[in-house]
Length: 173
Image (cartoon, rainbow, N blue to C red; front, side, top):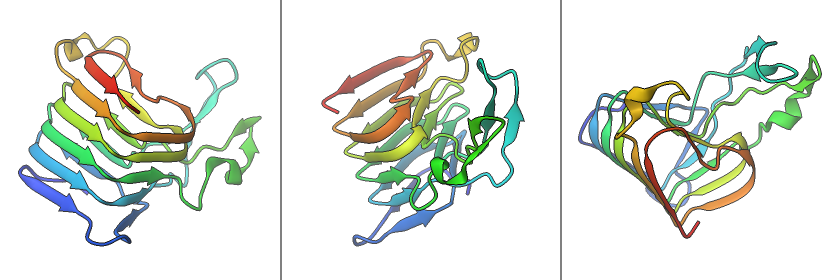
């Protein structure tokens, strides 16, 4: 779902959930996302890349929340991000690698700026948070100003966070 500028998405009560959905914040500003439990979207047909790493990897497309293409002034707080009932391990292995049907939980890429990620729970996932588009995307320099504070990280594998370019402040997680 594409989110427009000047939008607040706030869950009411203790059972506000987005299951298998993906929020895309692209070329927008002034967004608040609060009090929602996100269950990671599944790519039912991930792509096998035999050149990814030493042994090859399965690559999926969809993030829970994708902040991209110059999006500015975003506040992500008091949410829960998880694989829910569909963990990657439950899908088994193909070509000797876990059949990974999930991508990132929360990615900040392509020159986005002024993002605060606070008081969230990130649980039971592999690729958690990516900041920066690629190791070679130098146009991200002097952008990607991100603050990550007071989050809870549990049973995760990588990208906690993975920072390529940017000015990232991480405190009390």
